Length: 309
Image 1 (cartoon, rainbow, N blue to C red):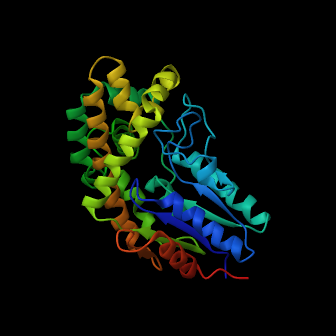
Image 2: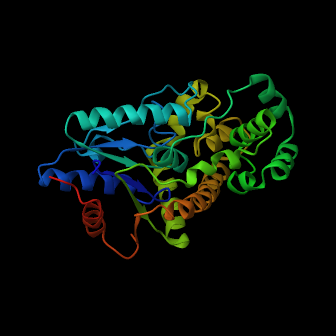
Image 3: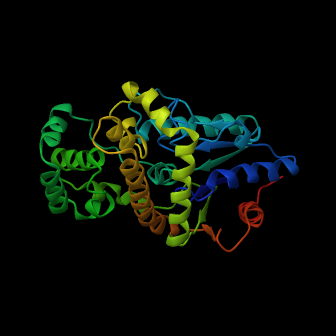
């Protein structure tokens, strides 16, 4: 049997990192070492700490973490980049006789890790410029016409993913959602998907509380300091995008904070669409944090993985 890889998923602010650390600690009690691989598209950037809820040294509890702080805020870091780095991390962790634990975050990363990626066409900057020159309404109308399945997954304000979906269609004549149907195959051997199932009302309360804590921890100062260095990808991250609008004079601070809450709750709604797809993964196990204590959930996750000696 292949070595087990726990893969923890759930909504933003759902407590995934804490559970991953606790699993690693339980394994240590069984004389098995473990290391965590972050599947978060914002935690990859150095300096983007508060807004990405990046675990600090205390929260990491001495457990090695990978794919955190691996890129500069100016960089472009794709899902292909992350998947290649994650595969290297898995191999390195296993070479040390340890268990890799993947936790995210970014469900596109998780899906790619479980099922791979289709080989899409190379980026065409000239075509992308044409698409960016369209109005948001024009891009959205085209996406809904040529790839309604992708339109159902991509938020109307998500310019980057909308442009990519249209780029793939214009280059291949095939909707990106059709290319991605290979994702319905069986997941990678050994991976055990462990999901957190939060009620909407409960996770929205946690989101609002997290935004409040981030602001109290100095998110505005972090955005002000990083602002000139944020590239096109990093500046679209939740929290950063809204506070940049505030610093540009478009919104008051109160308006920007309220927009962070609104957009994060909207992001959580989009995550629920991904999680419904992931729930169909054979052998996955789902847990209810609003009904069970974290300690019990972590124990249940360890039991679900059936780690060998």
